[in-house]
Image (cartoon, rainbow over all chains, first blue to last red; front, side, top):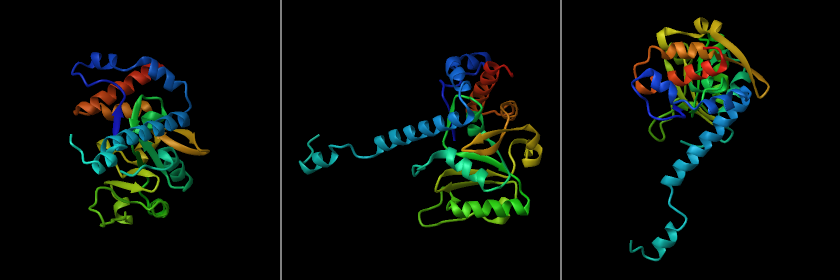
Length: 71
Length: 164
């Protein structure tokens, strides 16, 4: 699965091109292929950590349960 | 999905080190060439001859490859017959998700895509990557919004690079 780093798709092709962050493209073009791949690895790890953070119980979840959560 | 402990870069480098012939395509091929995308799997088009399939299977066994999306406890492993065909083998490995594609858009296979490849070095290993221009051409037939948005990004990357 590939996720474009930009906004939502538009129907008009010229407008779509305007959505691409040119400075981000320039930054990436200045890196080596391996550096770009490593950056992707870090992005994937961040996504997984965020996904885990949203699905895993929070740090005070157990304490709230033990104390009888009242809402 | 389990966290790949070493990342897709290592999966790609280990696959290259196996000696199997393949071409990197898809999101990671675009990433390697500077496109601002994030992708969570490695997509490759492999050479489907018996000798190459045997090398691939040896590598796949070493990284505990099995089909993704199977019910818990039902492990299905790739076979020589599957890798020898044009279909897509969507696998989970100990290093991360790996999609082995016999053929992609327009029936393009390893041999027809090989002239469109450039070589990059990853962890000291040469890796053949389908050029950004060819990746954009493959996306031009896309009708889904995600494909069109990806095309815009590839074209902008080519423009900024001075090659599009």
